[in-house]
Length: 297
Image 1 (cartoon, one colour):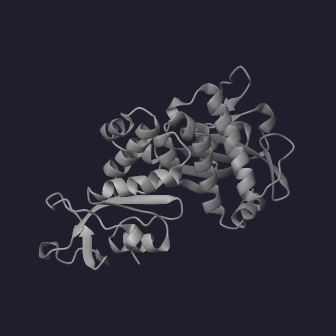
Image 2: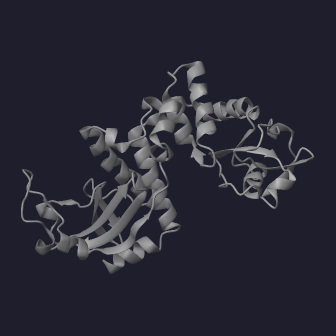
Image 3: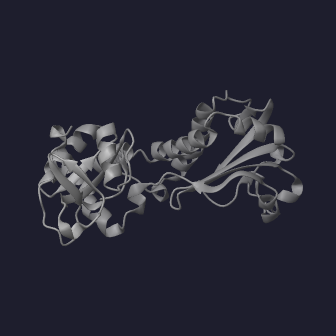
């Protein structure tokens, strides 16, 4: 177990590559670009099986580990390690896995958390009852025996899952069509201000693949409402940082209504754009057309 743990920790950017692989596995199983789904609870039984296989595939690729002798085996630290994945609170163990080192991975999209730990399975680590495949779950004693490398660490947020239900209903109220998809994206940026939105979120809302075009169109459409839509370019990221907004990276965007700074705004974060100083708009500020990003330095 110590050898396997050392091998994992020595991988470049191990935490970042692992968490990105888990996020991609969930997004792939949901397939929002084609289905419009964002909630893992809507996955069918076969799709949940696919999610587990996708997690194994994504982690194998991210870690640069070749496939093992079995589907769930990974050669790590010169050992064949059994990879076990769950979205719940425990794992199922087959009789042949007793005595072996298992890499336990869990991820919960609703709570935006993930865990990764190691255990050598002993008979006392398993519950008494077996299912029809003779598999048993990891018991409370088994969970206490796990050596955690990461426990309840942060999983990148599934934005649509976290939005209040009334906002989601407004965003998805328009039927999907050429105009309807764009209207959905416009509503997303209008209603989910101050949140980082990625390509997966945009394509799930629009149920299309042309995310950048939808964003550019939304940016121009919302200027009249005073809303800036900022992306991950260095200039736009600087604007977001100066205004105290979450800073988008490549493939991310953040929207927020802005207004010209006036004395009542005091020392609120601000930035000079198009020869005027702008700050975040409050509920009492008038609606003013936002500056055009195409004309900015």
